[in-house]
Length: 308
Image (cartoon, rainbow, N blue to C red; front, side):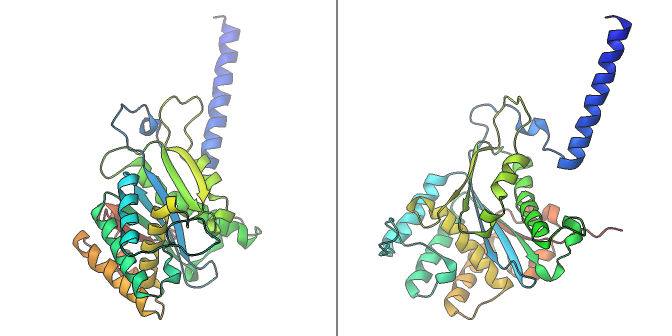
């Protein structure tokens, strides 16, 4: 290669490298390429991931975001349906084309509701699946961590919400506890939740997309909004139940039925090392070791790292 041409090539490569560093500085680090490399048949697990939320978006109270990770969806789905069949938990609303009535923690008020919820908690503990939650106390909100001083507060909260969803997913994808990579996962988000309005799925699609020209198996096959009351979405309703039971330890209601379900959830989680569901229990664990010590069910009380 001629000296002049070689020099031009070197300059072009240096400029390209500089642009790449600038883009990475803005977008944040990707999960290493080796983490999404080609996977031999049978070595990866096609999860379904269900996302829900509980709480408030005001300047007080707690916001909780929950995710249920299900590797064997069909088995858990059938078990949940059997509980509803046993209790004749059927839909009678002409406005919903569904066989079963929806399990919705905020509407829990009868003994039959409680029995179904307890049966579903048993299904959760008996099946291969796990639950992760992130809790944020709005009294600690400081918009400086999520934008410039002159940006609207609503924009900063949308940015924070997207980041919290990302933080829940990141460790599960990059370092699964069982050592089996998560590939071709399907993520479902209730379209009635506030996250639907925050374009969370678009953010997650971009954040966890493989690099250009990547030939391996991606983390996600699809991310989509759905309607929780449909019969196909029993696991999304289970996510609502688990998050609702957890939320009762953060912001208790006055309904005894909800207290009964919360206490039952805690009792069933006790063999998994969980002694309480309240914020004080979760705060004693370091975020990096929380899910390792409590792999079945855990809640991360998130707070910003203070700048020194």
